[in-house]
Amino acid sequence: MTIKTRFAPSPTGYLHIWSLRTVLYNYLYAKQKWWSFMLRVEDTDRTRLVEDSIENMLEILEKFGMTPDEWPNSDLWNWPYVQSERLDIYQKYIKELIEKEQAYYCFCTPERLTNLREEQQSLKIPTKYDQNCRFLTEEETQAKLDAGEKYTVRLKVPKDINIEFIDAIKGKISVPSKDVDDQVLLKTDGFPTYHFAVVVDDYLMKVTDIIRWDEWIPSTPKHVLIYRAFGWEIPRISHIPPLIWANKKKLSKRDWDVAVEQYLEKGYLIEAIINYLALLGWNPKTTEEFFTMSELIERFDLEAVHKSGAFFDVERLDFFNAHYLKNMDILELYEKFKKYLSIYDKEFLEKISNFSPEYNKKILSELNTRIKKFDDLKGLTIYFYWDYTFPEDELILNSKMKLENFDDVEKALNITLEILKNKSWKFESTDEMKAIFIEKIKEAEMKNWQVLWPTRCALSWEKFSPWAFEMIYILWKEESINRIEKYLNSIK
Image 1 (cartoon, one colour):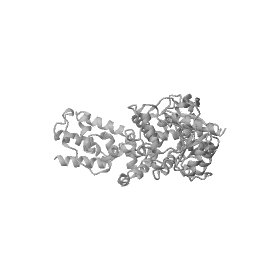
Image 2 (spheres, one colour):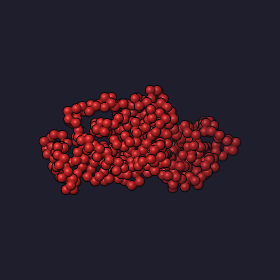
Image 3 (cartoon, rainbow, N blue to C red):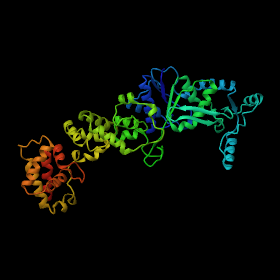
Image 4 (cartoon, rainbow, N blue to C red):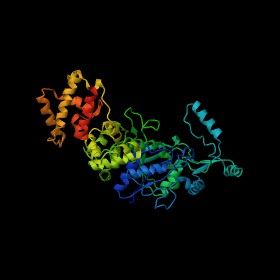
C-alpha cells in the first residue's frame, strides 16, 4: 500500500520546535515505507498571515534534510498546495454536502452568536450553536439567499450517536455526538474553515496517515463526521504526545526559545536536534541514544510512541549537542563553525579569519570537550583572538595558593619562562608539557598550583579559561613568552 504523510502548517510565524518533531515523525514514517511526505499550506485564517513564513519553514526543513517530496512551487505541482488557491474546489464539495442534506446554510449574525454565547456562559452551560437555522425550509433558505443575506455553511451533526475512531497511539476514542457542535464549514468570506479544508485536501491528495500533535484530538470527531458525510475512507490517525517544559507546562509561543531558528542561532547542531527530538516521546527499545537520520528511519516505530507528554529539557539537548561536537572530526567541526558564524556572527568570523586555519583548529580541538554549543565559543576564546589585557591583581594573588605578593608571582612565572625558552623541548602534546613542568616545579620546591595558577592568569587574564598547559599549547611558545614578559614588566 502507498504511504503518504503530510505536514500542513499555517503561515502564521516561525517553525516551532514541537512542529519540527511532528515533521520528523511524519518524515521518518513515510521514508521508512519508501513513500511520500508532503507539505501543504493551510492559510484559510487570513487575519494571522505572516509574510515569508512558509519560505522560512521550507528553508529550515531543507537544512534539516527533510525537504518534502511535494510542496508549493515544487516540480510535482499537479494541483495547488495552498488552500487559498483551492477555493473553487471547496465550493464544489460544500454544494455536494448541502445537496446530500449533510450541511445547511446559517444566516445568524455575529451579534446573535455573541449574545447566544454570553447567555450560555452566564448559565454555565457548554457554548455551542443552538441550530437556529438548521430547520429552515427550502423556501425560507432560498428567500434569504435571494435577499443577499450573508451566510456560513454548517455541518449537520447526527443526533444521539457515538463518534468512534481508532488512534494508532491512543487506541479507541469515542465521543457522543451531543458534545459536537454544528461546526462552520464555510465562512462568510467564502473561505473554508480548517476543519472542512483539511478533510477535503487530505482526501484529494491521497494522504494515508495523519500524524499530528494530540491537541487535535478534540477536533478529530468533527473530521470523522465530514469523512462519513462524503462516504470517504478515513486515513490512519496518530496523535503524538505534547512537549512539556521541565516546569510541567506545555511548550507555548509565549515562552522563550520555542522557534527552531533560535536553537540554530545558539549553535546547536542539526544532527543533535534531530536525535534529541526523535527520542522525545518515542522509545527505540534499546540502550543506545545516538542515531543518524538513516538509523532513525530504519528503527522508527509509530506504535512505540508514548501516550503521555514528553519533557523538553534544554540541559538534555546540551548533552546531545556536546556529544556530537566532541566526536566530530576537527576539520568538519571547523567548517561547521565557520558556516555558523557566516550566518549568525559575521563580526567574529572576520576576527578569526585574521588567524591561520591551523591556529583556529587547534583552539577548537582543545575546547570542543568544554562547549555545549557554538555560541559558547566566543566567550571561551576571547584571550586567543583579542588584544592582551593585564589580569587584575586580586585575580593573580591568591593566599590559599601561597601567592602572597608579586615576588612570589614573579618567581613562579620565571620558572615558566625558563621552560618555554628551552628550545630542546618540543611540547608535542600537553601531556609531555605537563611532565616537564611538574619536574621543574618539584626542583624549585614549589607546589604545582603556585606556578600553574599565575601562568594561566598571565596568559588568559580571565578567572575562567583553559588550564595553563592548554593555553600554552594553543598560543605556543613565542606568544606565551611575550604575554608573560609583558605582565612581568607591568608589575615591576
